[in-house]
Length: 442
Image (cartoon, rainbow, N blue to C red; front, top):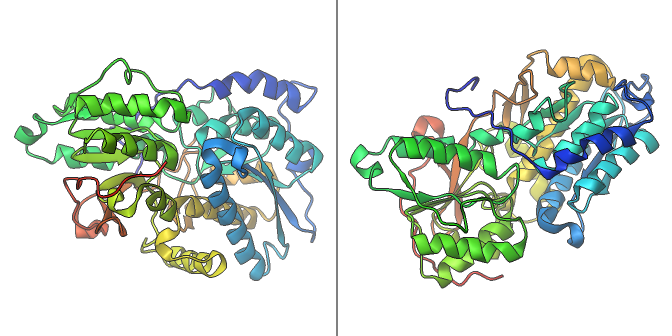
């Protein structure tokens, strides 16, 4: 179990969505209390268990559409598997999923609707920390447990901001810790090699993207890696496509050995790679916070040859040696087509949300949200397709393992490379990224 690691950071990342908190609490109900709504403690019955979620689903949903669709498949696959085995406590699971269009305002409206109008029994989270923070405030104000798999930024767990009741539970690895296996790898290099390395840390203005990159910069600088920066990347860039080329060009002009990119999706990474190609610049090592873990969606966008050598942190991959994970991957391919290598981590995160919820329902004998919150804070360990889940007092999964993955063999294989060692199931890291192979589209 990984708990209270010495390199763990507790930065609170400022985010625009937090500014919604006052409006959220005022809009959720007429009073100022946070007592559970009628839907929060559903009586025991034999009717369906209704679970509500809000995801980014339509083409107008901006940057999170691919992730939202993958999460929807993960939620639906879990529900299908549960219902095929008799449901939970003999009750079938029914999902009600709304489209938030990647908007913090819309995600608030969606969860207000799900809880106050649709009276769902339970709630699952959206994709991204940006949307999880305001959504979790709605759930907290109504006494709902909020179980999610893609909202692990420190800001989500900042009790002063949004969840004094600690009702939010992230089944995945805390965001700020994700790049530490890469930092540990650099730390193991000879000091003479480290001292000659340079790095740049461009970051999107996003509570998910920033914390792991900020921590990596701090730790790598302490190891002797020289930071290269300029006015264009001194501060996080706006998370809109028009801002990517300028930031990418600024990095290319610096020619750092290492690029640690604070990204949230495939389009961000794709845009940086396209500019790097145009500028005839290939970093020796390239790790992105998110995007390269999206399987075929990533390689299809950037070209498999270009993907070679690119790294990304995650807590899961299609070849993960876990019986439940293998079964989920098999079911996914059967239902949605494609191959195992094309199953991205969002699916496993969403499926794990369902597994944790199922364990809590079975342990408490129903869908009483107060009892579920107490159970999830009890220290119980729950097994999921991503591995063990155990929550600390904030709702972070302290049992999650941190891994780094890399595209190898001309971008045809996505493999675990860090932590190093066969005992960790890793293969040898490709220490230098190959030159660009094909032109990236976009």
